[in-house]
Amino acid sequence: MLVPETKRAILFRLIFYAAAGAFIVVVWQMQRSYLDNWIAPATAAVGSMPDRELDALLQMNQLVTTLSTGLLGAIGFLLINIRKANRRFESLWAACASALCVGLSLFFGYLVYQWIIAMLKVQIFDPDLKPLLWARNAHFYLFLLAVLLFGDFAFNSLRGEDGHGEKQGATGD
Image (cartoon, rainbow, N blue to C red; front, side, top):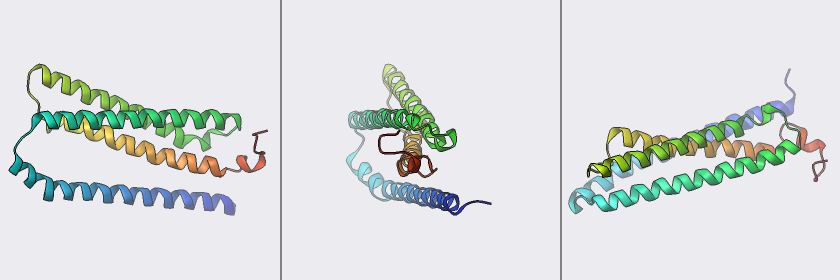
């Protein structure tokens, strides 16, 4: 039988992931609606600007890569401090999954970069090319998933939800 603290921890995580999932779906739907209803007619009137599209794509790729690298550093920092507190692996699964998602996000960011370089070599730039579009989406959404998992890990490890944090003093003795 589960103790009340464990039931609360499971319920909290379920609510956390449900709310985060709902937030992601709302943002995704708003993004699609925004692009379909506002951006598409505006770009048809202005015309194609490949240099600006390339700059925007490169800047977005750089931003997500920078944020992913920072998140990976934060995960490493918390894992080093948590390791000193002798946490079990069960409390670290979200951090490991987050680090895996960050690694995959960085890989897809590099893939986007490679696609751009290949297109520029043949002097064709199409930001809507299917493999490039797929890699761009994977780059961003894996980063978003990593942030979600990191939020779960950081919040629960800082709260000491699994009971280890409450038994130790502030110095980790």
